Image (cartoon, rainbow, N blue to C red; front, side):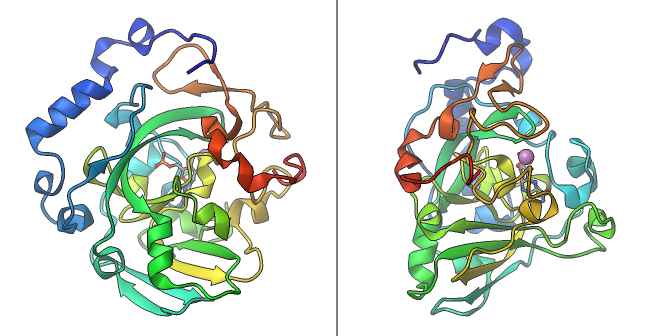
Length: 306
Ligand SMILES: Nc1nc2c(c(=O)[nH]1)N[C@H]1C(S)=C(S)[C@@H](COP(=O)(O)O)O[C@H]1N2
Ligand SMILES: [Mo]
């Protein structure tokens, strides 16, 4: 990467929490990465072995941070609340309703919905609107592959994702901190971009509940809040759907939510970020470093469409 040199994480973090990708791969293969690693769950029932897609030289954020420092307001607003409060969350059986402008309009058991789709490992930089970032080895499939299978109609311009609404299991939904259930959406061309995935795993295991088990959206060039967790409904729409954070605080959270160091959040700058596990802040990169998506927004004023 051509950005200014930042200290190597091993220079500023204790060796024990420093995970090098190569060591990880070695360890993972020793443990037998993939289906045999865990019993039950979505990941284990996937027939195809994960394929590692591309290479990436940023160090991975350690498992403990990826699964212990989360935003999932259904389970509390503190960063350590989701891990604590989501442990008994039931993700099996799980079904996803597919509706709206689409040929295959019905409710699918999760296994059937994703059966046969190619699961890969995708190591993505993730950037939260709050200013922290991580590098996460997701396991998932291209949303595009699922969309092609479902067959949206010509009127499908957007795709909407809805999180489970369950006030018993998700205590946060008893407080009006957000309009529930959590909803996010993408324009169809964003959804069809090969970088956009639905993740079912992380670090070669099923997603832990706090990370959005059993299936969640991952869009690496957008702020983390676009990545709706624990999805129970996928709806194809003609018009731009209402989305949770945009509806809650429109001035602060736009529909597009593209990572953009030049457009500040009204209450803080978005120019830099703190990669969790590192000491010094890094410059935030346009589109979180995924410049290949720029063509999706050609001719759009990204200050207006933030
Ligand atoms: N349903 C739901 N999805 C959600 C959230 C949430 O509160 N509820 N938080 C979002 C935010 S703000 C971020 S930064 C990411 C965090 O994902 P992670 O905990 O797996 O890192 O999840 C996103 N998806
Ligand atoms: Mo976030």
